Structure formats: C-alpha cells, structure tokens
Image (cartoon, rainbow over all chains, first blue to last red):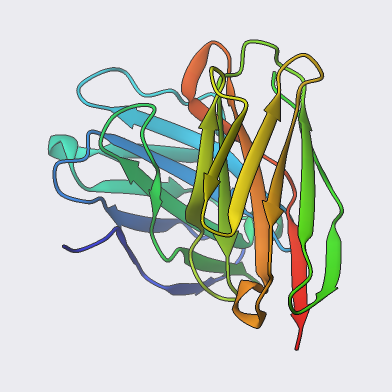
Length: 113
Length: 113
C-alpha cells in the first residue's frame, strides 16, 4: 500500500515568510510524528499526535512552530516568520499504534534564505 | 530527558567484514530501542528493534544486543556488502512516554568493495 507522503519535497523561502508543510500518513495509522533533521545531525522530535488525544508539543523549538492534524489523518506543520536556522529536512512518520514501528515519509527539505 | 550517544560517527570496513555501532542512553526507564538505516537522500527505514525484556535479537546478517544494566545497545552487521553503506541511527524511547524517540547523531558506514 501507499507509504507516508509529504509535500512539498523542497521549499525555498525568504527569511520572515511563513511556510506550511504537509504530511499524509499511512491509512489507518493513529499515531503521527514530526521530526527535524539538520545537516549531519540525528532526528529531533518535534510533535506527536495520537488519535483524538491532545498532541505532545514538547519538542517544538519555539512558538513560531505549530502543527495540526485534521480528521485524524493529514497533518500540517506551520513555521511562522521563518529564520535561517529553520533550514533543515522536516520528516513525518506514522505508526499503527503508539509504540509501533514508525514509518517515515521522504521529508521536506526547507531552505530559508 | 533522554540522551543518546552514538559511536563511531564514521566507520569504514572492507566488504565481508563485520561492523559494530554502539549507543548509550541515559533514561533507565527506556524500553524500546530501534535502529534505522538512511541511504543518501532517502527516508529512514527501520532495520531492527529490541525491547527491554530481550537481550539480543537477530535478523539474518543484522543483530542488536541490549545491556540494560550498563544502558547500552549495539548493532552488529556481519558479512557486510556495499549496499549496507548508509547512515545508521539508533534511538531510545523516553521512559515516561514510549512513543517519543530520542535519536543518536548517526554513524556513516562505508563498505569498500
């Protein structure tokens, strides 16, 4: 079946602009995660959604970052007033259950000029 | 919070040799330890995982060992092949919320033909 998809694959923006990144999880997966991967670094946890529960936002680096998940499926990560240090690959993952295998999307490569 | 250290950061081996990557973690309550492989420009993919009630797990040429007392776990790849070349990430769950993974910074494995 279809895996996790993300769009856009690449995004170039100017400092100060807002961006929206989209994630389509695997159908039926209740858990959805966002990570950030900076060059040469590991994956940094950002936010977690599970069903209808309140999301765990503990990894969001600042209040410029927000995310929502509509209808328990598609998720959007929004970065307001982007900064150059926001440049990274943003990865989305989903799993069938909270401690199940996480399947990653291809990521969105964000470049803030 | 959880802290995961991964060593070495780069590893070069000859085809057919074994490769070992080691990780340590800080949260004694962690109980889920996955390993991901990420080829250049691709998404991370789970290759093996282990839970805290198991000391060792094997899958063909790949094995993972866990020492909870010492809080470290290792990935072993035997009979390495050029297609094993990639970045490998270890991760550990946060004890209080099993879904939240803390990743190591990765090991770039190069298998020379």
